[in-house]
Length: 68
Image (cartoon, rainbow, N blue to C red; front, side, top):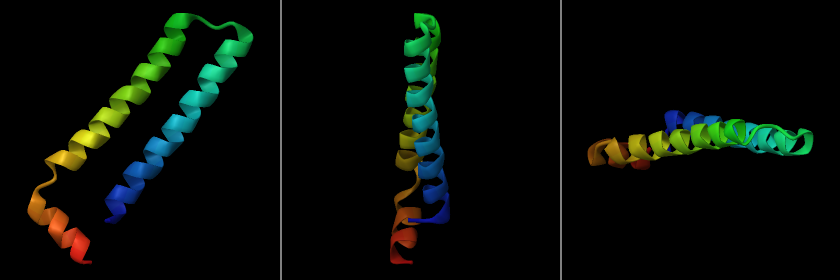
């Protein structure tokens, strides 16, 4: 895996942890369901974009990265 992949995975992991903590805090303090839904949707979109970028990467570039 390339450096770009590691950065993307790290960013998604940080976003996931932040979303989980935010939803937990909002649950404890009685936050709006709309805010919780928005947080979860941002995480969902981030995961979809990450998966899309992985699929769009041409096969030749993947083979070059795997051979490194």
